[in-house]
Image (cartoon, rainbow, N blue to C red; front, side):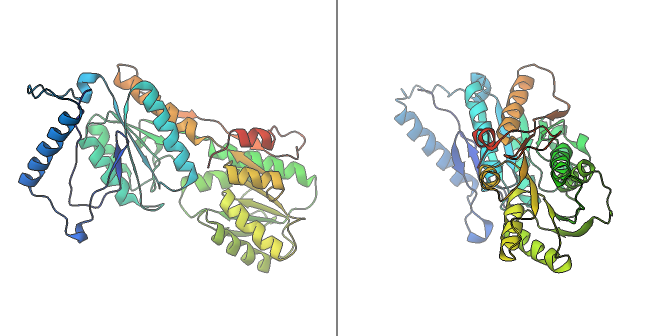
Length: 370
């Protein structure tokens, strides 16, 4: 059995938990007063090394353990927005699966909350210091993260954005993501076909100002429905942050403003389920068409039950698998990935609409996440 060196990075900044070789390594918060002197770290490291060699049956002959470079293992980092969202849980599973299959070492980190740019910056810095060959990241703040990404790239680290592009998009070497504009366009086309010429009173339950993913889905929906921003058929627009409770509140507000709403576009399925709750409370759940984006298992089941009419399914596991593979290929002498790689999107509905391609919920459930 070989002893593999563990690298612990202590900084004065807060950082998210890192996982290295499937071992979680949280840094104690500074305000807890947990500090390690240089001598303490050296003593601790020697003690850990001795214990590990004993456990592995080391002979004590002083032979050094092989490093990841010596064994040929490639270090890959994955940084997600959070570690609790089912979308990112599935993304992590995909990265772990791909790394294990290729004999690579995976380090993972996540923000404490969606929007935790500082946590993602710290994770980038620590992964670069640990010697990763590439970092896969779903940026929480598409603009504010760019300087940290530039430093990593300047240090020779490949950086690939997953799911969400940076601003500008070429701040990363490559982007592996759903075509979010197409995802919105599909449900816009579906809603238009389903309404079959009936005058629409549309509510858009959006994400938040300035977030690229939300804007792309919103714009795609309008394109698919064949209308422009400011069209009189759009009777209410509210931001939800992609949250179910906020989605419910937004729908309640829209119903007060325009009680005759009959089409609801939602940024994601939690917002869609919040909208459904508000509509049901008013006895409107049967006569309002709700469309959404994501294709998670909960959302797909909501399509199956009729709470949501249709959703555009995306594939986070595929994004991560392809990102890890591209990083390993590059590290082993392959070409550097560049530009945008579309990881696919599929309309999911059990009520087909003429002229709009899609799959039923049996397919959706077989390919969902979360």
